[in-house]
Amino acid sequence: MATHHLTTPFTDEAIRKLQAGDIVYFDGTLFGIRDLTQIYMFDQNHEPPVSLAGMPCIHTAPSLKKVGDKWEKICVGTTTSTRMDRFSPDLIGQYGVKAIIGKGGLYEGSLKAMQEHAAVYLAIVGGSAALETQQVEEVEEVYWEHLHPEALYKFRVKDFGPLTVAMDSHGRNLFEEVKEKTRRKLPEIYKRLQIT
Amino acid sequence: MADLDYQIVEDVAKELYIRALCDLPPDVREALKKAHDRETNPTAKEIFKAIFKTIEVADKNKTLICQDTGLPIYMVKVGSQFPWNGYQIKERLAKGAERATREFPFRGSSTHPLTRINPQTSVGEGLPVVHYDFDGENDYLDILMIPKGSGSENMSTMKMFYPAHGISALKKFVIDTVFETGANPCPPGIIGIGIGGTADLVMKLAKEAIARPVGQRHPDPQIAEMEEELEEAINSMDRGPMGLGGKITTLGVHIETAYTHITQNPIAINTQCWPARRARAKIYPNGNVEYGY
Image (cartoon, rainbow over all chains, first blue to last red; front, side, top):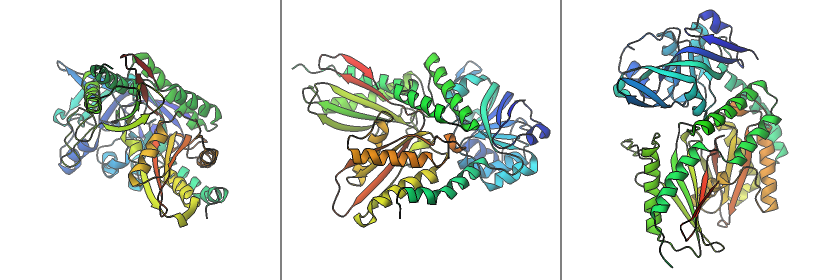
């Protein structure tokens, strides 16, 4: 298990070095997206007003407060990614997103897109909003403000992590591997519990 | 006996919601530390370190541990000597939960089930959830507050088994549920199990099970043994924190039981995430308030 400290934008070379099980921290830009943001982009055909190429996107609906023209953070936490799986291959293929951050993981189609376009899924520690919020230095921009709290957010982050490389660009999916290992243990567990 | 000033109940309901979201109970902190010490998987160790940092930041800044402030659930136990007006208590709990949401402020999650409109109050028709019970021993009003977030609550499940299925079917149901739900309920948390009762009671039992201090065993030795057995089995799955591998998949398995019908054997599972949030207050007839967990 290696620990990587990265800076955005992520290069293909940096992404290809990440192996399932590694830990990542990074500095720089992080885009926040959610269900509605992606429905707006992909189902209602709105082009993002900013380039996402080389950048990480996190599944979040942050609590923010607008003071004058500035958005201040209240609480930035992360939601389950599986709900948004169908948008992920295009986020990677069409818009050049290099890392998707969330909890719970994504499915096979997203894993293929990661292999093809050099991208990864980084699992955050669910429930750790207090820590995440502290690592967000500033809310730099809120695009599509009418969609708040599911708008497109541009955060500046410092030492953002720890994130576990759960799906890498070489076709490994840690969630599936762990699940498969457990599946093989089930008969022995049933036997011990006298489950017939 | 003079009636209570019900403003106290409202203020306590508000304070309990905020306390539960920001201050993790000592037994949960202790269980997480013990789990980290037993963990050998390096990725899982890193996850535990992030969990400890999160708790530290929440303590220091008096801020939310998790952004999902959940739906408010109050478990109220009325002492036999407590002068009470049940309607007032119900109204004030709702008002207190709403004030916590607006005044802290934090994200309200209560939503109309069809229109999906969210009034940002954490309450609404049927909310907060309030369970009442009565206590013959004490004179105070005991209020336990559990905010329940969606990641773990969405993994709730129940099944009506028949007597012919036996205990073996109940155990299989628990193991299979933990296997299927995997990373979703933010493990390692508490697996709350209800056994017996009716369809509605069994889920309430499962909810009471997650509210018990971590590791506190059921007083019935047979049930306690089943808790230990399932806990050991779940932790031998190696799903680990966040379902990414490791020795610790649960901090504890708690079971609550009730008598059931001769033709039934219901079971319910309610999983709690690692921030097993809860806060308690005792309100005495003279208006004094004592906070705890």
